Length: 429
Image 1 (tube, rainbow, N blue to C red):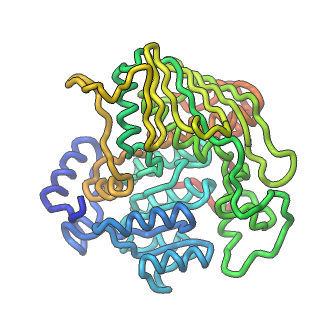
Image 2: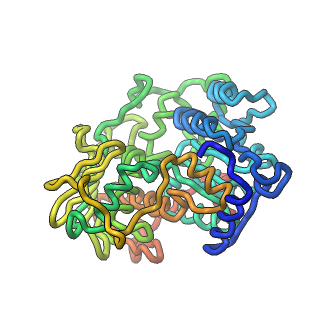
Image 3: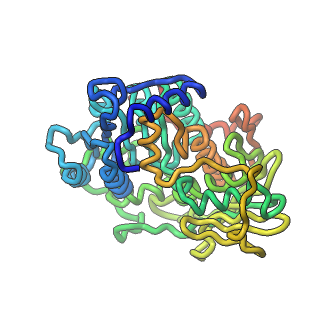
């Protein structure tokens, strides 16, 4: 819908939300602007994904972007131009943004190693949050984000936007309702070679920090490292200190779809084995560049995530006793039968409907209802990724308890459960 929500719809959403749990009503509903006032949004991280998210929110007439924040002056000023903001609404330090009383929600699109710290701080400051995937850069950080969101009664939408895709939802409904028989295995294909931007090799040496770029703030909770442009912005993905390559970059999307179709949003695999793991021998790009990771649930299908240069295999394939479904964005295939002819029965399970990930977030901010990708399911999707990363790093199988979210009797895996943060940054909420 393009129009502003009416008072009746807001109240109706609030009543429904109250029945499900604690109700927190922000100023946008009852405050200065009164019922129907716009959601005042601040954008933290305005690079590639951040700019895309910003533009999507600017297209929603229920949103007013009131501030932008980025450690790169060029990114910051470009975003301010799109949002028609002056110098007084541009920030380098996200903490100054969160201090603003006129900010209802924030969009966070910073490198992975910052996700948890900013999400927890935003929740503590009473802001709702649209946060890029993965939810956090380690299992412990993800659980801390979930705890903060629950403690402060905030709305969170993770950027795993395939949950707002019609074809993804339809494919998962076919699987959940047994139209391919018993689900036996899920294959997840992701790219197998780093798509480095800017012509960098990862072998570049230290260089002066350019004017207009706060590199110390960019590093934040990660370990300090010499500056080179090769490690920053888009290419942080290939540096283990910030993100483990395609394991989380695409894996966060596809493993999320896998768990949605398998009905495993509330649990995690219990055994993980990584093989065929290869990394670059030299340079800063030290994340796994090729791999095969097998996951086993206590009950349910086997999941295999593998890297490949064959783009036709990038996506999620559900394999059942009587057929299969392949899903990736606008691609939805099935066999041996064409499941598009299937008509759902009244007794079939239907999944949460969202047709636009950004608008669904604003819907939830206004109604205090749920989002397509809330914190708990996003945490389990990110955990899926991190379990694979840990198995790949250790070079052996690991066993995981999805209830306690621990590695019983495994000190090496436990040491990788939660990343150590460089001061003054913490996960305190």
